[in-house]
Image 1 (cartoon, rainbow, N blue to C red):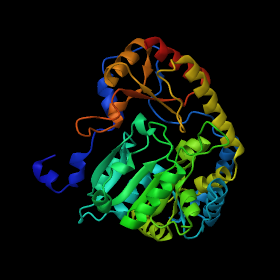
Image 2: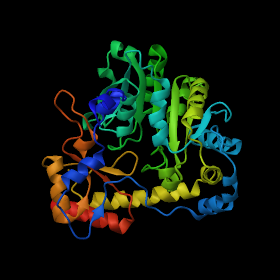
Image 3: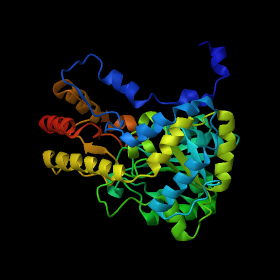
Image 4: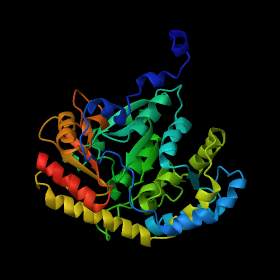
Length: 396
């Protein structure tokens, strides 16, 4: 592209980092091991429940209609009912819920909706973290402010390190709990504190809760942002938005089905934005989603599969290396050498593909909090995961 053509482009494009999987292609170039096991991609591999497939097939005739941006009322009611059951948070399905085509698209688009590119605004985001948050901030014309995740704070940001002036510049805070990649969970008390700060400094909290239904203890599900707001008496959910997906919960990543819920004014603005953005969920997927949100048995069975895989992995790996995540399906393992060298040699010698943690993090004062870790997605069947973990232990 010529310089003249570049001059008219969104300047945020020049600031974007290569996606982690692009970097990995370069890291693993020239290596062709036999019997590869790929733990790099967080794509659920458990079987899709048959009742969801049945609901999808039975509703294929509805593709003769244009879908509505706001979603079918039945879907919004099913989502609101699930939120109330799961988080004890009352939700108005007509004003506080918006179905979306997977949360990746929505997490990106919300920044384009709420950021004023003509003002000096910051976006707080976890580091290491999901790269969509950073790209959304840059392309909306805001400045990313990275919040380091370290084991010293149980892989939750040190919010005490943020000054009042920094909070005042903040327009949007992304938080991910349970976290990708580190598996940390934000406590109810911390969520309540962030809600209070968001009201004081008028910023939006975008809570990515896509891993909320994968956790080790049936009696202690991770808390949610709307639950914290309800406990504070803030049932208008001012400045609060939660993002949920069926991909991990119900093993239907190909449906791209999720929702945003919370502050009615923000939901209305986001709906208007999406009217022009043009991202309505296909009617058959909406019908199948109603069935998925209405059932918990398959979700508990899904959790149990992950629980078994993590139990086996922790028995295989040295205690000094492996710590169980508080939620989600990633093992976040420290490496005895530089993480990129570890990942490349592990792939070459053992045929196991993992993501170097430094590819998921950004430098802060010369330090990358993702460095010297690897992310392992335990999404395959138990036997495959066990074999992969044995190979990692062998290399260690």
